[in-house]
Length: 229
Image (tube, rainbow, N blue to C red; front, side, top):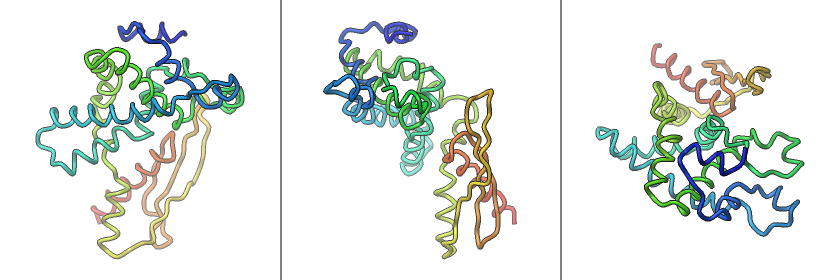
C-alpha cells in the first residue's frame, strides 16, 4: 500500500509529500539510504499536537472530571501502549520505511516504533492539511479508539493507584514478576502473564500483549483483592 492510498481512506490528498516522507522514515532506513532526515522531529511535533487535542477531547466530553483526573486520562491516552494499538488498528505498519535489519527484527510491530510513527504522521497531517483535516483524522483514529466501550477503564493507571496506596501504608516491597510468555500464532503476538508480589507473596495476576498492559491488569487485580479484604 502506498502512502497516498493509505491517506485516501481518511479523505486526505497530500500537498507536500516531503512531510510524509519524514514522518514515515525510521533512522535505520535513513542510515541505509543516506538520508538527512528521520521521523524524530515530526514525532516531537505530533506529541505536542496530540497533547493539545486529546486534552480538548477530554475537557469537552467529560465535564465532571477534575484537572487531576483529566491529566491522568490524557497521559494514559497518549502513552506508547495506546498509540501503538491505534497504529495497529489502522495498519500503519504497512507504510513505515524501515531498514532491512529492523524489518528482520519485526520493527514494524514494535510498540515504540508504531507509537512514534502515529505521532509523526499526525504532525504531517496537521502541517500539510490544517486543523479541520487533522480533527477528521483524529476522529477516525484516536477519538474512535478511545471512545470504544470499556476503553475508559483502560485509561485508569492502576499501577500508580497501587503505588500510592502502598506508600500510604509505608510499604515499598512491590514487585512485578513475569510468570509466563506465550506466543499466540493467530495474533502473531506474545501474551505476557505478570504477577504482583508483596511481602514475597503473590497478590494479583494479569495478562496482556505488552508487559505494560499485563502489569496494569495485575495491579488492577491486586487493588480489587485488597479492597475486598
